[in-house]
Image (cartoon, helix red, strand yellow):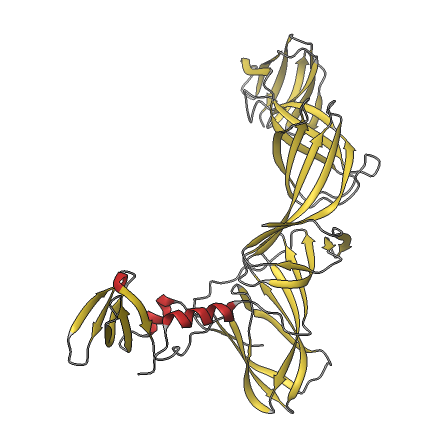
Length: 455
């Protein structure tokens, strides 16, 4: 029997699995917020005249094979892709044993003894072999140092590969552009903000955090990011196996992304090549740090949280206030420096896609020294269709400075305020808003009566 050592096999597999960009290849990667990447590769390929097969290797393991688009760069039409197969049954010890069930293998133990026989069963702890004379042996894997297989089983490959059946009117080397979609790629914005001592200005920097779990490393790629929510059609589940269709590292060097509008989205293009490795999270500067005026606001929403007063930081994303740039959706962390220079995390929140000149509100946390209570003090039924509810809200300020607390009260149905201790605004059909001033170390209590009419 010709020996093929498992150790050598796996080493060869590892070497072959290492992604390599072919000479002269032009590579572009566009990453979306929604677990999607679009890859465009230009490769030199050798075709033979007639109907033949060619392997397009080094594709992501999460490629969508139905999205593949093949085009010759010289716009020629003398090569046509007739059929495509996507294979990702990769070499592994488990797959080798599975493929060799009922076939002969060789095993060598620690003492140098050779065991030869038909593989009947395998698990991670032991194998069952049947020798030529019919004898059955169970061999513990902990005693085995080498396993030999005659050859690589048919159907196993070392890298996910597209196999194309093509028809060429003439043979020779041609340059082709191949575009495809892959899952396992996403990006989101990460913002870091530092409040000044008076809490009136925020120094804001933005990073694009790119995650690649597609199964392929993209070396020296033209990198683009799309900010926006694209609509995607639902796809039926595809069984694993052969599918057949018809045609965290920080990168701080160099300039950040260049931004422009693209269709109904915003595109960020890195003006230099970048390598996005598989199983890597990469951060690249999204825009130059900027300062903007901010306002701290205390917000009490008793119908959502009857006990806590929220603290928010809000600012307008405008040029006049120091920004005026599209802000992609992502996480924002807010910090403030202490007197000794150390930086303390105040809180974090997520922001939606925010165009310029729109307001951003970041919930930082809850106020420690401001306490609020809300209660329905009285209910009166004026008739079968009309009732009046009297609400009472108390806000206790234990700080050494005066504050103003914004109170948002939710009301539903046909209602109107018939009496109130404080002025108010009806923000929408269901929201009543009060601006409540509370002096230092003081308590403010106010009441209002709402009349509800049933129809």
